[in-house]
Length: 244
Image 1 (cartoon, rainbow, N blue to C red):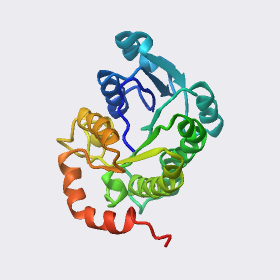
Image 2 (image 1 turned 180 degrees about the vertical axis):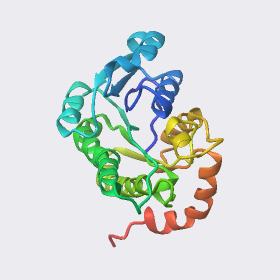
Image 3 (image 1 turned 60 degrees about the vertical axis):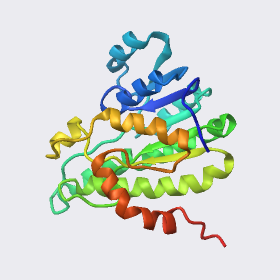
């Protein structure tokens, strides 16, 4: 299912910086009618508000809180494209004293956050024949030791994304799973990754993938190396219909 972002209403969680901010800018550059900026701190989007005026609307939202996301969906019933970009990632070894608390925190945001967003917006997206975009990672298909708990939480979110696609596609909703490699953001820097992809590579890739009606997007050079090796498994296993 192809969706052109032109004249569409979008919502981006974690829209105030990094990849989320780049997605907002790419959507508006490609003609989006309006973008909701869903953020925990409503004072963090002033730069985008000054730049785009009434084309952006800031809404308070916390993907780790079910009530917050339900309220968010009630305020954005005209949305065509929902991008669940909000996530956390901290360097964490599995063999450590505080690994359980860290892993629970990352699951709460990165995996349960997706479940909350998908459930809150499913009816609206079905009504508007829209799209749900989930920011996953190459870490969802390979565990990186310096980001073990993050990798595991993203593996969970990717598995959930597959299930969401199975349930929502028959209802006319396009689901896109985005798998960037290291990106030039604060999180990548903390994890020790250098020379990451630009945020615009990811945001522009999303625009193109939505238009193409794709399920997977591996947007940058490192991600494309994963895609090359993963493609056969993806085509024959992940996106195959085993119902027959």
